[in-house]
Structures are given as C-alpha cells and as structure tokens.
Length: 548
Image: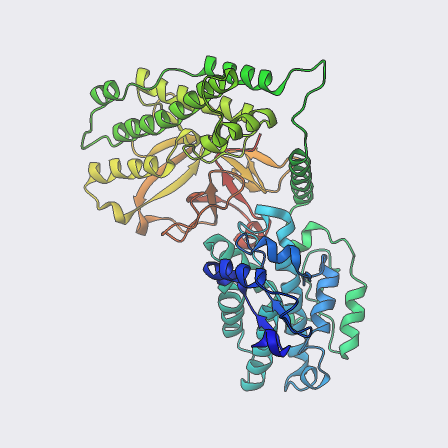
C-alpha cells in the first residue's frame, strides 16, 4: 500500500530479525520504478550484522550514527543531547548541586566505558555497543531519584545504571565487575561532598562546581584532546598494546589484498606450501598409544590424574591426525593426485601468510600464535605428555600445556576430596606463589603449576605481591604456583586480587552455561597491597599463553 500511495515505511532493529532478512532482500529486489510511487521511501535501522542483505546495502543510501572518538568530544555530545540540553530539565532538580555533579560524573562514565574499547581485552573482554539510549534513561532516573528522596539513593542509582541500563548489555561476568568498579568512581558520596574530588591522580579531571549549563561544556573543552591511559585506570603500557593491535589489524587488511603471484626469480606459491608442509610433517611424532597409556596409568580411585593424562592424549591425537592428514593431502593436491578442495585451499593460503589454518583450529586448543610459534608450542605440549607417560607425573605441571585445563584442575581437587573424604562441591583452591627455583618433588596435597603470565601488571619477587608493570614490558612470567585444595569456609581473608585466568590474550570466547567465556579457566587469588579496584581498572589477568 505504501508503494502505491507514496508513504514512508520504517523497519527498526533489522539485526534482530535475521530469519526475515531473506524476505526483505526479495521485497527490495521486486520494487519496480514503474509501479512505485516517486514519494515512497523505505527506512531500515540496524546494528552491524553479518546477516543484513548485501544487495540492500549496495543499492541503498547509507547513514551511520557513531559516538565521537575521544573522551572530550563524547562528553560534549552527551551534554548536547536531549534531555540534558533542555534548560527546563537541567534546572528543575530539587537538589541542583548534587544533580549537576552526579550528572557530569554520569556523562564522564558514559564516555569512559566507550573509550575503553580501544584498549582491546585490557578494556573489555567483549567490545560492547553502549549508546545514547543507555545514557538517556540513566539521566532520567538520576533526575527522578534525586527529586523523590531526601538523601541521594546511591545504591539504587548504582544498581539501575550499572546492573540494568549499562549492565544489561554486559554478558561477561568479569566485564560486569569492571563496569561496577568504574561506576563507583562517579556515583559515590565524595563526588558531592568533597569539592576537591578528582577522577584520577593527575587532578586534571574533576566534576565542575555548580554552574550554568554552558559552563560544563566550556570546562570540558579545556580537557586534553588525547587523554593518557591513567584516566581509564590503565598503565601507560596500555597505549603500546593499543598501537600494536591497530598495527596488527592494518597488516591483516593488507594481507587480504596481497596477490598470490610470484616474481620470476622467487619460488611459486605451490613450492612454498609444499616446503612448509614437508617441514611440518617431518617434525610431527607418531600418535600416542592410548591403549598402552591405559595399561600403564589405569583408572584408579585415588589418582584422577591418570584419567586426565589418557583423555589429553586422546584429544591431542585428534589434532595430530588432522594436521598430518591436511599436510599429506595438500601435497597430493599440488601434485594433482587429489582435488584441491576449499578447505585445502584455505590451509595453503594460511601456510603462505603464517596463520593457523581454520581446519586445524576446529580441532585445536585456543591459540593466537602465528603458524611457526603454534607448531613449536604444539610440539612442546606433545613432549610434555610423552614425558609424563614415560617418566611419570611431573612434580610441576605445565598448566598451559593442557588441552582441557579444567579437567586437570578438577582432578587435583578430586584427589584431595577422595583422600580426606570431603564432598568435592565444598572444595576450592587456595593459591600460593612460590619462589623461582626447581621443585623436584610434588606437594603432599594439591599441585604445583607453571606457565602463567601476568597481563597488565607484574609479580614483585621481593615483596611477593602484584606490582605495577615496568615501562615497555607488557607481560611478566609468574613463578611456580601451589594450588592447595581446601574447604571454601577455610579461605583466609587476607588482601588479594581475584585474577581471572584466560587461555589466550583475546580473553573472550563463546559464552558457556556457567556464565563465563570458554576462554576463561579459573579465578586465582593473588596477593596484593593495593585495592582490587586498582587492578580491575588496569584489566589485570593471568594468561596461559602469549601471542608470540
């Protein structure tokens, strides 16, 4: 009817109707200029979506609405939007001093959570699309709550803003912890009671004193155009991480445009792929003998690690066969003995660009390493299991060397639970970071582990506590740690930072039924002499492996 009458049609949030996108594409393709009214318009709104029809994008006029980049422009834009820009709304609060300071804090918070995305996983595990709608509803609630209550209900405001409005978008538990920690900087009693309150140690950023609407915009214009990482709670090294990530993305884009042709004097791509696959095949060992492992390490009630070893060998055998078969088949395809399938072509292209082939990653443990480093790491893991099979369980386990790390951790708790006849669901781990030396014998209870790295901080080996990173050193190696099973009720309440452990520096993965990412391993209690909020702002975590 709109096509005939010349009306306008608006279809909002197309990204939510993925199953209907094919129908939309067909409807748009059937629009005929001869039978369509010249005033007819079809408006579509959507977040970026892989399911949105490409043909509709190509044939339509595209407009984007993005938040301005930079802390200063973001805050100014917030003050120029409705309802803050409405003079009646801005000046109608019963407690103008408290409202205006908390309002500025809220706008600063809104800009901060958006700008943290540029720091990658140090900022957020998952880059969330916080937008003006979140800010608008939070501003209206702030105005309403201050008008309705004698005292400012900070707890209610923190819950509505941090758990509902902004927190409703957050799917990762550790990101939710970060969001709450940041919000506490801006929604607290100090911001209204202390005229010298600042948002960071530099003293540059603070809530302006009560004034006219324009005074807040004028103050914001005096803020630095390029803020330092400290205002985000980050260490100065975070800028290096951000720049490395941008460079990596740039080179990835360049690789997409690279020609596969070779020069007259250089090797052909087929010759290069054949050499790489031959090198990989020459380094691969034989499959693990699962039956021999089960005979030597049978399933027993008091030693769960036997089961862990056999299961790990089975998982690595699957990956080992996948790598071996793909290398053999790629050589056959180059010789013309088999058809070069799409999957094999992707393997060949990955070998040329030094990436892990997608065919391998489907059967592999998570890894962000380039192909050469990945093969070195893979062979180290195979050797770790082979040594375990031949010599016996190591005194210090390489935590990063496990395919399924959670099975190993459960095995450590299960041994303790069966030894002392305690229900395993009452147990947890206590953690002790040991000295840097060789440990020849395993502990009486629990396990020694190695192979972890600190991201966003370092381990002070003298004080044996978390400390600030050294300039230009992004990661630090953790010493051997002792995972001591104990009852949850027996955990001592000393000052610690609860650090999440991730398999890779990407940190994010698929959301599992536990509410955590599949990249997440466990949360470790690490000694610290600073408040947890300090390390939360820095995005401090432990990693099982680095990218190089």
